[in-house]
Amino acid sequence: SVGANGTLVTSNGLPVLDIGGNEIDVTGGVVHVDDVGNVLVDNEVRSQLAVVEFDDPHGLLRIGSNMFQASEEMSAQSHAAENTVVASRSLETSNVALPTEMVNLMMALRAYAANQKVITSIDETVGRLIDQVGSPR
Picture 1: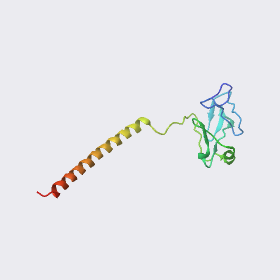
Picture 2: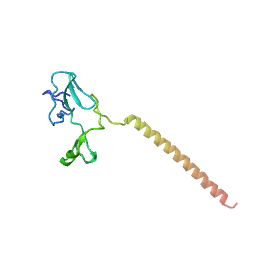
Picture 3: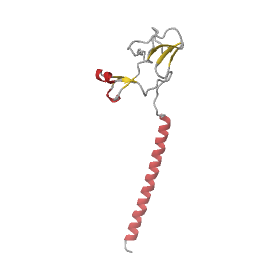
């Protein structure tokens, strides 16, 4: 989004930084971000997003929803993104469709219960067979 002062901001209102660590001024036109992180205003490159990758992203410290912080040591080991694609005008969402997964869970639970009844029935039948065949008459 474009903030009140004309800079690029996140949905939480935090400034988006460029390669130099500066806020990105996007005043004056239509803003677009391409897939490598170039910020274009009226099809003119204005700046470039600071997109980096870490060798071990598990070392990042979670500081909020969808926000992570790198220690100074990790920041020194970061490198320009090679395998990352910037998706402009996109919102990252969960990769799970909750209603579909709940239906799948209920179907699996019912199948499990049905199989459990079949196994119990077979067990009772085998038990009766052993009692009747094994008992002298």
